[in-house]
Amino acid sequence: MVVKELEGAIEAILYTLGESVELERIAGAVDQDEETVRNVIRNMMTKYDSDERGIHIIEMDGAFQMCTKPEMYEYLIKVAHIPKKHVLTDVLLETLSIVAYKQPITRIEIEKIRGVSSDHAVSKLVEYGLIQEVGRMDAPGRPMMFGTTEEFLRYFNYESLDDLPILNQETIEDFKAEVEKELGFESEEPADTDTDDDDFDALFGYGTRSETEDE
Image (cartoon, rainbow, N blue to C red; front, side, top):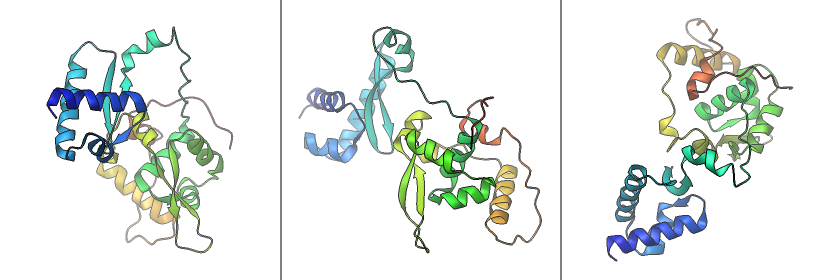
């Protein structure tokens, strides 16, 4: 299969399905090895980004999806119903940050870190499709463990969890000390567990919001 034909087949697959498609699945459909298909898709991504087109291809954890470009929103909203993007309050951002950096994690562990009930926040994040159940802890009661979803990557424009911002050392030590304290571990040296209110927002490059959330 020549490159042009391969590009056409891949384009048709991504356009028709309208959702993320794993590399392995695409390679199987076009009867090519994964490395070849990955190179072809990334070449297509470059073409879409360089041309004045309204669509592009994004990569998320080894899967690919064809989407409209963000700058096309002002035109799309005039002809189609665009679902309202969920507003993430400070509480939701804080909870989501904990899940993102500590996953897999149980609701009880989240609450120990936050120091307050997190039922509502966890339920909202599940409803928004940003976190999901990823297994059960091997412990009495087998509590659910939560992790982030593909929608989380799409929402924050990450290809994988490796793209999460790297915390500075001071924040890491404070966060680690707070987690150890809340989970009942002993620390050799006391650490200042006070963190700036904007720390969790900084993790995602997301501005703080004034809305409050009813717990």
